[in-house]
Image (cartoon, rainbow, N blue to C red):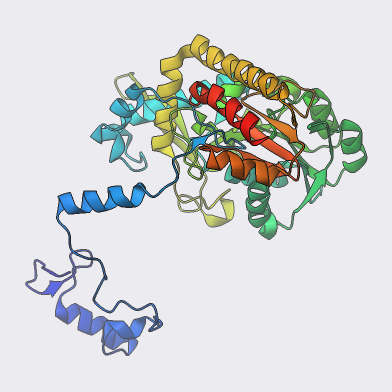
Length: 447
């Protein structure tokens, strides 16, 4: 694209140099043409044609609908870190307002007070749920929040150490991100064992020593169980000078043990269980920690202040990423955040209120318990595998191979996880409970 600038020359509207300016710059670097500054392989170079047939708006919509109609129409009972709850239409109506949707980072508080206040409320809600004094706004997802927690632990721990201890149930994709992040910090990830879906505290006691910088656990766990040994984990971490990091989410936190009360130093997770339909990829990273570590928190913090008329105002009070402060003092190179998603989560949480949030969480316990009992009544399946309380999801053992069961259920219109040779995992929430009867009937058919 080209456009005319104030000097009368022609150039890109995004880099409006005159022909004379461009020629002078090329001469300075010894090039005749701007294309000489780039080494683009011929196989990927743009040849001037996009290869996309021109269509009217109506034709384009028809074409896209045709493509989308080829997707499998499955009722999902999938979980394992991605949870679907009904999102009230109010969330869309408010968050899609132009002043929210088109806003980038709220660098100018004088023109972004509304958004900054919403983010402050998001932080405040999670402070109440975790018991920890500091919450940022925000991280990319659960995995990156976990990785940043490990880096924070390495910075603040008083003695030398290089081991990050994680439970055997940690999802592979979260571990991959964790290992990627901490490679440059010369840390290593080691696994400690579990017993019947929860932490084996005796095994952890044998594994942990003063070389551990952080111990990580989840509540609820990836397998849906409620962790019963968090106090013991917190004590073991404290005894060895390691930070205790706990993974959870806002819905579960409303009814489970408060992280601060069991010794958690950092809470991570995905806050996208509220305000955002399940996207199986995009998330909203929750990151909370103690006030002692406020200057080690990655990302941004929104704080309350006063203007010159003594009115309450909001502003970005702490930004520790490398593009804002000296690189050697930065805690993270995270280059953006999920502020709009945090806004949606805050709206949803405010809509529910404390009582509504607790009701939703209790429903997630009841629904999982009821569905597990119904499946356990069928021949060829035992549910749940773990003799624990569950939130949203549970693992069931099948007599037939799990992948065959999952495949046959898919043919019946349902999606579940095959998590072992003879284990499937089922997740039920308010978003799919209407199809519970049909799922049970499908299980009975395929078993």
